[in-house]
Length: 211
Image 1 (cartoon, rainbow, N blue to C red):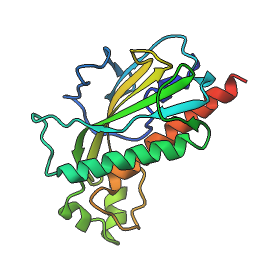
Image 2: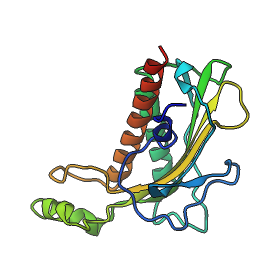
Image 3: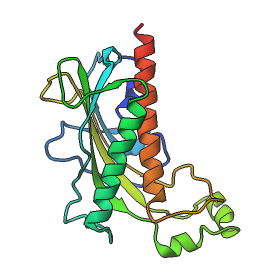
Image 4: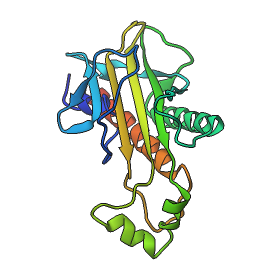
């Protein structure tokens, strides 16, 4: 498989926070720490050819925040809304270059995402995102901690029972515009946006390379 698949297995290209306790779901294959990104666990089969797929099935995004991690003051309604947002974004971005279908099939690439952890932008942090404080805060070497999201994802080929690609990654502080208004979930939504766009772009590159 071409080098871009290391990116597809991730689907996210953002700076992240520490992940010393990052764990994959119990039903995932064995994941390894990505060499240049300690906040990312990764698995991919060798000699993949995901570029051959022109159809995609996007499964409903699951929320599986464990009791040990806690929800960090996140309501079930908030996490469910964020899961629906992620599903909609995946469908929108993948649908620009692939035909979306309603179920897996032999000629379909299935995309399955899960949200494993969430931390919103707090009111105190939001207060520091009001200009002129925002620009100074965002340009600081350390910057503000604006919340985070841990995403897990799998790509299944055809009717396979095991994923060909799987990842778990924690991300925080994406490339956001410090001059615009922030909401409680602006950072998590931005990370989801970037993840879905990156995945769609990399799959498109694979299809183009295979022609």
